[in-house]
Length: 211
Image (cartoon, rainbow, N blue to C red; front, side, top):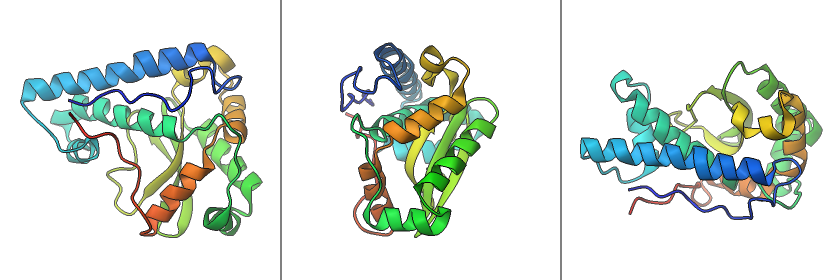
């Protein structure tokens, strides 16, 4: 059975961009529900996957496993999202900063493209900064879809575009949320570790193994 991972920071630590109330609703209710339903379906099917990553990859694109995929992928996406945020403002450095300069022309240009992609995304989903080998790119995915089934793509950071992620704090202004999130909460140290792993240096982030 998979567990709901604890947050690495207090529910109020991301204020004012994301409020304590939103974090309690988003982590303790929404995320927990995805994990609970995933476990329920697995129990009914008698399945015991070795990892959540394996489960997401195995069920991706299969109509008969759509409900299981949606809940498993959303369980993974949310845990990754929490890891992508830091209460302490950060800026990229080292190899990641050099790659941002090379592929986007600097952090401000990356922010512009990241926000643009998130605002243009229709409906619910996610906007990612990903690495394909050394190269950085921005990708958006719909609903529960993520980058795990995409061979050669490693997610570095992600922002949640579902309305429950920002509506209590920013109403329908997704653009304001994305800009504030990028400036204040993006965990560039985590992104740097993911970027190193994408190039064969260390391991990518993984959801806690099932008990």
